[in-house]
Image 1 (cartoon, rainbow, N blue to C red):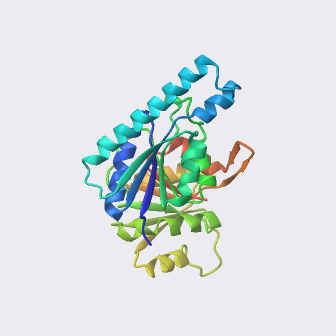
Image 2: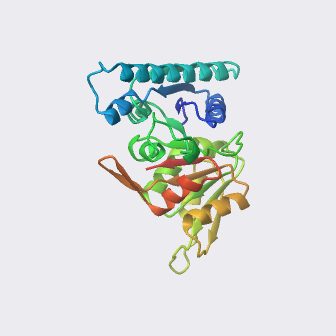
Image 3: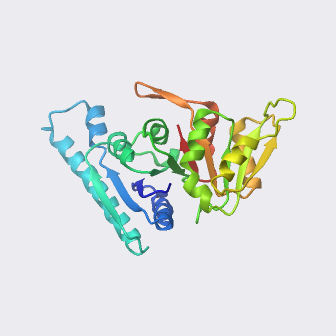
Amino acid sequence: MSYKTILIHVDDTSGNPARIQIAGEIALRFDAHLSAVADTGVARFVFLDGNISGVDPSLIVNMNQMRDRATKNIKAFKKQVDVMGLRSFDGIVAKEDAWGSVGLRSRYCDLSVVGQTNPAEMSDAIMDDFPEYMVLNSGRPTLIVPYAGEFSNIGQRPIVAWDGSRAAARAVTDALPFLKLAESVSIAMFNSKLSAGEQVGAELVAFLGRHDIQAEVIAKKTKLDIGNALLSLAADCNADMLVMGGYGHSRLREMIMGGVTRRILESMTLPVLMSH
């Protein structure tokens, strides 16, 4: 198993160049095709405006500006990755909003790369719950890059959040290409309840071992909420990526996320690979 097609969402936020760099480095590592999508946000703009006739001159001006911005973002992407030596990449300007453009295209990719929502840089082209939407609806693992911090060569020291759940199992399987190439792999377990004689994390360690992945279990008791406990442990371990299941469900257009997932999405200090 490997990543052969990687999708990245590009925009004009301050964290975009770092996100492109990370996606490009991953594509190089796995000899993968890198595909970028810049959404115009036109569908969202028209929906919010309530005018679908397209004859309002001010509406047309705004839509043209949104298309021009997306085109500029794709040009910046191509310029940045062109010097990285990628074997294969492309970029498209999508007429839809991010939900429609990136969400649907992600289903034809092995991994999607998006940015954490930055409250200081809210965009009229994208919903603030876009990362949540990708985790819950793309059907593919989503790598979420924090808007603050510098990250290079991620995935060398990943930490896996393990609670034995379906979502956590999905995330571990989706992260196997990273885990196989990692220098070290840590498995984080908090407040585990075990039967007499049972070894913490033993079955997951055995599973990973059959994939030639050596992993160390770190089992802790904590009174902190699990999200903060995970981020604290990741810092202590000098981890450069967190692998975890994303919990929640979509009801109409309202995202309802589990407490740990919500905490990580709001407060992440390192890139997070999430699967649902």
